[in-house]
Length: 195
Image 1 (cartoon, helix red, strand yellow):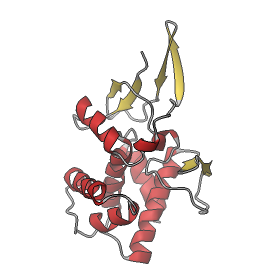
Image 2: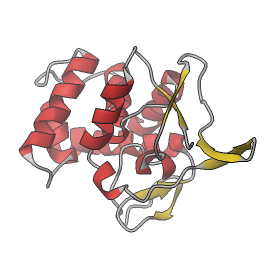
Image 3: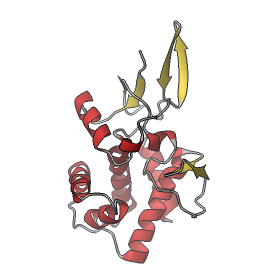
Image 4: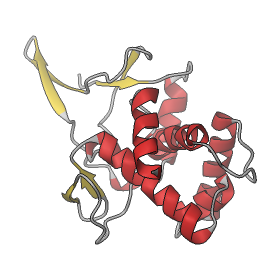
């Protein structure tokens, strides 16, 4: 039986994870996902991911590794001519990065551009631009998810790196149905991207 080891925090149940995986933006195009690594035990091959933190215990669920995690692009940034740090190509739709940290850094760079060039520094404004082209239902669900998980209201202005890190952490979960990265890694990548 194939199982993917996911790191799920905050007591999220398996049913909620499964529901979010189908609700996330990129998973509709992810039906052909393949695991990042293979582990052979007793003649059975099972996809695995390596835990990146000891803060969250691993939870095993069936299914493929989400496209954003596999591409080291947990924000599902669409392909573009941008010369991102760590960009190694694209999969036809989304950018591929050499490390997840560089993919998260690129998310923070986009959020910085949203803030500095477009004056978008609220959850509602950010989500509307991040998901442009998606239905209003997806946008509203995205906003509700971020408000519930960060405790920041949709109209509050984001100011600190800590607020942006909380936003990015929860955007990753919404985009992929999981968030396997340590808080320290996200904070560092956001600091790098916002600098």
